[in-house]
Length: 238
Image (cartoon, rainbow, N blue to C red):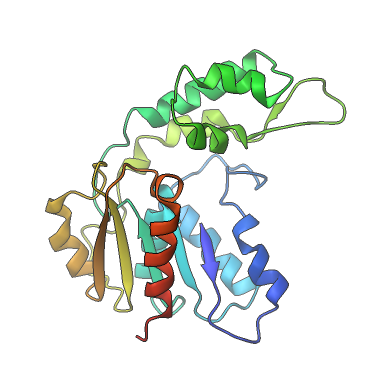
């Protein structure tokens, strides 16, 4: 998940580093057994308040998209715009490749791989895309006191959360986020079906949906197209 602060007085160094701060149970962030969209939204709300960001734009992909939507609906005055990348405010089970990713990382971890190349050889059995594997490999880090790579995310917690993460906490609510919202939909993906359009319009009345001809991994598969659409949206007057 990323943020763009609309306040020119914000520390530029802080703003440039925001994308390095991960959600709970991701990257170098702390681990916690409770991993729901409400938990994640509250974490982001706390981050915004702590750093005194004034109505930032919030961008999230997949699980991060649902986190951004949850945040915007529950704290509509806290953010200025939302970019939701290939996910919608609906109940839709996660595709099987997410559990497969966890299985692949668990296998690489159990093998006590000593290099990312070794880990990549194992992950190729679970994912063919080099860019997606590179993202998965970022979860393996070197430790000074261990000869093998260490996995920095809690696979057990994420595995238990797979079911609930297919749902959306506010799909049946009367909450609304009336500021501009961009939904990027991968045409070869299934996470934003046409049937979701009425609910999107109801919860996010100032939303628009842009289709991109690729699968779920829009940022990796269509980086230039993604950048142009998002920058144009963020720079547009409300």
